[in-house]
Figure 1: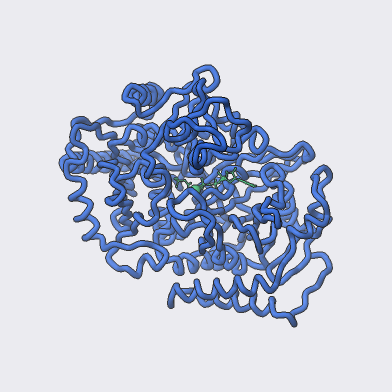
Figure 2 (figure 1 turned 90 degrees about the horizontal axis):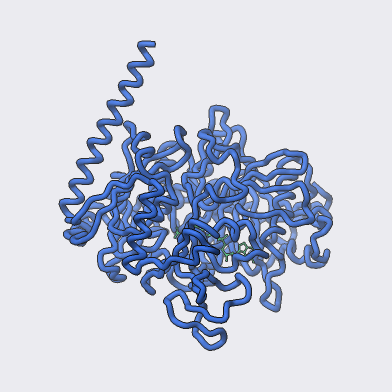
Length: 606
Ligand code: GTP
Ligand code: SPV
Ligand code: MN
């Protein structure tokens, strides 16, 4: 009994210490930014309502139709502030070599001095919101606390949906301390935009943007960029991954995670509603964007979702493509940069027929075929609490996370990459992830549809040298006796007419079914140079309206085109310098050898 009391006391002392440090830090930032008011957020419903009411009164938010979309709001951003700004994103350390060639680097001292100047008085006349937040389940050894200071009520309201904000977070403060985030919209000057990360200080500073990934500091900045550095140091993984539980008709559950780059299908796969022809199956969502994966005492991978809400792409979501999302966003949702009809209903491309009268995402009257561009911004999004999702896994709150049986890599490739492929080994799977080259999307500013290397879908989110990150992935061979199987998928292959060959969305469950079967040693496959591919018959699920020829086309491996792909991988690997792990180079050489015309492969099933 005495021991218990002493532990409890020590915990309380540590929490009090941390609270004291927090109060001092908030004061020190307020001294620089000079807000007229400091408001500590409680995360309560009343507080959310007062935040949105204030924004509606100020014209920052438009209240949507209360009958169709109760407690829903539209936010129109500055037209130049609509996506993540990778060019303005920096990892700030002492040594440039810490961050490698895939990140922008700034020396910590230089960055601190530069940003401090910009922060001076930036909140004059504004309220500074103090948002303590908890990432991950309550009382989980894997959860973390952060505190964001922001002068944006839009950010405060979004953070209350995306995280467990308020006193609950403060109760989790301990000797580990907390991640510090300072955010100001300043003047939204795009030429003075900085999203700076200081892994050594567990600090984030973000200026001159109000866009999700740049401004909701819990998300990409904390849960990925800073967490990836902590994960490397502590032996776990912080990944740009969905987490789902796939239920078979007999009730068996298999948990898988999936890393696809931004705007490339994670949310839709996580919220998949099974097609009518797959009775008895279900997909339970745990995460749609981020997974923190730890090894348990048996060396098994266990994943939690650090987030409590979704900040997800609106366009192309419809009752046809994803009825579960459509149901979820019909209440208590903030829409950003969607179009608006005359009855104050949100609309976006791909939702269905457009209403007769429509305003585009900038509030201009929009006429199909006449107005330039799209009515909703291609990167328009909705923010909704995960509690509203109709097929949320009961394991979402499990402090120990869910066991991971398979990891999937994917991304937009209109050519080359087959619908699904299984790696031969952990090391080959890590190569699959490291080789990911995908088409860019509207989630980040810059050109769309340009092929670029996005290893493990983490190019914009890995907070350290990507070659060290590859070594970290490979190190799990030594740490775990129960490595997940690794797969690659691509639902985005197109035909000569430019149309997708695979129906995608709910039909992706056919692919997940094969993955589950492979994990159980059941699914049929043929061996190819790039990995195991399903037999045609194993994807010909009854009810799926797609010809055998089409399935064969979706599974075709064009060895000559793969050789070209390897050349570009080789160049990418060379650009990473000496830190590239030898094992990965060897895996690439093995793949090259398998692709040589003389190599033979058995065509029988595996
Ligand atoms: P981030 O939130 O940016 O990390 O993106 P995400 O990976 O969660 O992507 P999301 O599921 O939101 O999908 C992005 C876009 O791709 C949306 O317009 C979807 O409708 C579309 N999409 C998703 N899955 C499929 C699919 O299987 N086939 C096709 N054709 N489009 C898809
Ligand atoms: C992404 O870009 O991968 C997103 C959206 O999930 S944001 O949070 O804005 O980065
Ligand atoms: Mn994302």
